[in-house]
Image (cartoon, rainbow over the protein chains, first blue to last red):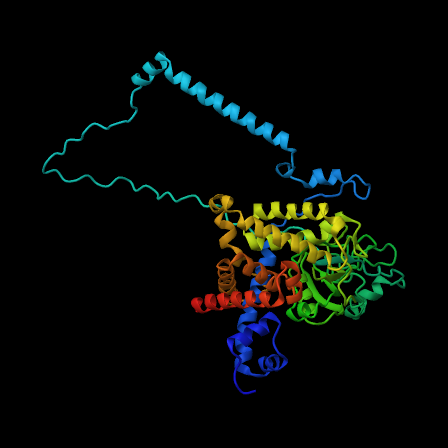
Length: 336
Length: 187
């Protein structure tokens, strides 16, 4: 097929209803592919923006948990049903209408009656017109015009504040779970501090990832000296190693966690599942060194990394000080 | 790894046993459709509520031949149609609707660490599609949103709207023509 796709055929392709030969052409022909991509990109951006917008606007504080499955459906009816929708029997509706009519008629009659009273009519006639007229200003000839007054600030019409993108709880289409990795194995051989200090193999030791106890702290020591000397202790340096949760090291807690986007391929394939990521949360609560442990494919791994890299955490703490902590995050993608 | 869609929450063997979890799992999606259709947060909240009230009242009629989301979306589409058709409210809706809802959808383009130029271009695209969607008739817009925001296929849309597949296609074609015209205009 040499001819380019017509607009009808491109539409069919976008709708998901293209004949196989046209779909093939849309992939193979550079010009047609570019045209299709232009529309696909606009529609994808539109979908993303609408989902983001409505997701933020969606209330998450609603509650529907009432007496379910108990045979007393009336409870839920009353809870869900706005009062204005409750269907009243005809006599109650009629009663309300008649009552309203009577009250309005009575009020109009009262106003007319008051208007017909002499004292009221007299008072109305005597009412002064409260319009202030400034005294006329005499214009003197041959005297220059006065200077303009201080310029008044232009008063703009008040505008509603624009919505701020703010974080709300994520919707159901993804879930994340911070899972604690296996805790640190503290059964280290006893180390002679003097021997370590003398040795040059510090980098080799710090590479075990157990703790950061071997840094160049003020004390220059190795650890607190209790146990196996794992932590930096008070005399130890603030080493740059990565901790694992447990043994007095708290888990980092996500504070801001923007949702991951679905990739286009995965959406088309209705692909769902979970990506397991490994990362280090640094002292400032920023995720670094993000790696995929369990991939899902179809671009979702990249989307998971992209989202998690924007997360902010309350860093893991050790002895009241923020430290780098190893963490694992499971990002679950689910199509709604 | 899940490859099939998980069974719908609260839906067991064609019956709705746990309405509570049905509301929880589908409310965001129904609200999304309502808000995108009506562009009015308050009306969307109310109609979402109405949708679940209707669904709850009619839950005995739910047969397992369609998924629960198709069934709920059917109710939602009917509510949108009734709402739009209610001419008595049109004046008030116009006057009460805040411009906030109308103008700002392009601000919600996910940034995905893109360059400012790329974001500006994406915003232009979103605005063009958004304005094109606004110019559509209620039926066309419903079909357009179900296809391109809710990712439903033609058969699902036909089931939701009660139209024939050919009619759905015709509506989608017209909607895409409007989008195309909007994009050409921006160019």
